[in-house]
Length: 387
Image (cartoon, rainbow, N blue to C red; front, side, top):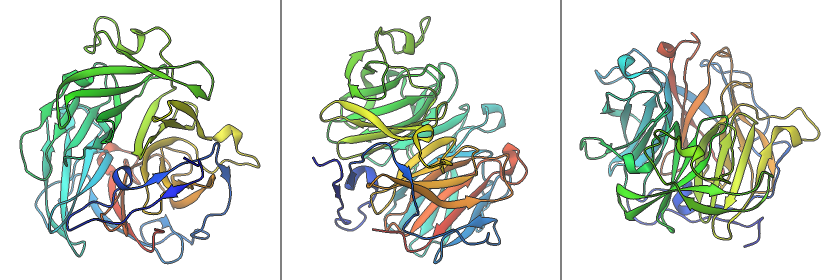
């Protein structure tokens, strides 16, 4: 495939999800460079303190410690990774809570009507700790990942209300994000450690994550080249951590967000402000972005964290710190700020996810204006997103 080729498809049938990791493909050159964005310059901050391009508006959906408007459900602390699911009459946004179990932890959801109004809200996972990011599966479950030593992956059921299930076969380590590859029937996993690794999980039966094989990516120490996969002998991670069980497993500095689109996986490493690109068809890897390689500077994207795909095939990358922006990396190797949250420098942006129609972007400021986990704010941005 031409590395500059971008394929787009449209929603197929009622209830289908126009989500990037199942319907769009974008092949990126590397590394992306600073350039003006197609949406134009950011305007002055709106009433919510958010700078947006012309034509876009923001609204607050929920605040930590307060009932979600229109419901009696109190929104969780420190909202983090999120995703959107079509639910038949509208859509559902799910969000993790990156606090210890004693403070809530787990994950929650908000159900929306077709016009974007809130219908209901509730908890989908409790009793777990420091649920950071995760990933959506093709069978409409949400994988909520614990970012603690010997952390676990929990499979939740936001559309059916079934009880969440722990998935120990997916390995016990400081989990961050997950991305499903329906074609190869695997789940990719990032690890938030300075000497973290990149994994994939191969279920014995696709759609059932209760059993399978955990593998780790093996490659050289450079920023591009070929890679292979090797089995992790002991996914339980004790007494030897999973990341130290396979000689030659490639080290990644603080794995964060992860996103899959036809044949390519992108994931971020916050320790070195990089976005990595894996061609899983030809088993090649390279950099899609590195803030140290942006010329001329300054680099627009720092503190790389959660990542998702946009309706036009771009990557939307949220910042943990930096200048509190969600930045876009385009298929023609440009990077620019799409939005900036002001007055919240002690926070981080999390959970970016698009609605089925691709006209609404949900995300959170994990600690809001207070700088505390109890001050999280979840937003919706509406406007003419590129398709």
